[in-house]
Amino acid sequence: MSSSTSRQAPVIVITGTPGTGKTTHAQLLVEESPVPLRHINVGEWVKQKELYEEYDEDWQSYTVDEDKLLDELEPITSAGGVILDWHTSDIFPERWVDLVVVLRCDHSQLWERLEKRGYPLKKVQENNEAEIMEVVLDEARSSYAPEIVVELKSESTEDLESNVARIVQWIDAWKQDHGA
Ligand code: DAT
Image 1: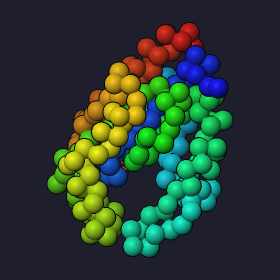
Image 2: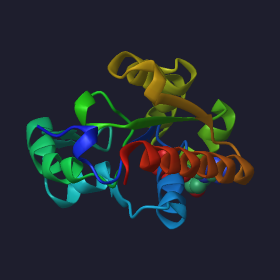
Image 3: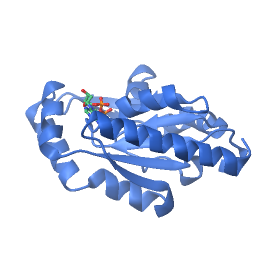
Image 4: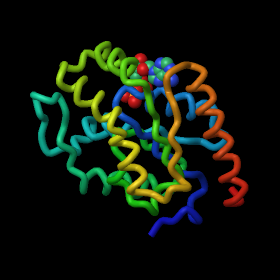
């Protein structure tokens, strides 16, 4: 069984409604991190490695095969040094995860980002409602200990930079605590 004590570097989940800035944060964090981190965009992984059951044309999304996905991720997360970038977090076992960052964005700005991405209207609406209802935040809070879940605003470049700086500080502290 993996545990945080056996990892040389932390496992960080960056979650949030689609469009809140997970990938943008993960990419900058890879550059700025004091320890090497591998960025896994879980949605892309599911497509590339065909870890899905079917594609839903209506919603333009995949139904993930969760067992296959977890089997693929287990050895990677047990080694540590990973950012898991996904719009949902409750699938990852608690023992895998050291920090959960939940990104938040004002709904009108989120609407624009999702429209620019070319999402169908109902997908824009559904995601926007999910952001307003704090679905992703609630899910993270009900899946992990409160002290490892951090909610961060992602509405500007300043937010992005200060969020990443904060996570870098957290990684420095993690390294000290774990003698890494
Ligand atoms: P996600 O991975 O959560 O779907 P993304 O990183 O692809 O989101 O970002 C979606 C768009 O929003 C992209 O054009 C970059 C922009 N964006 C993300 N975070 C931002 C921020 N903090 N400030 C300004 N723009 C941001």
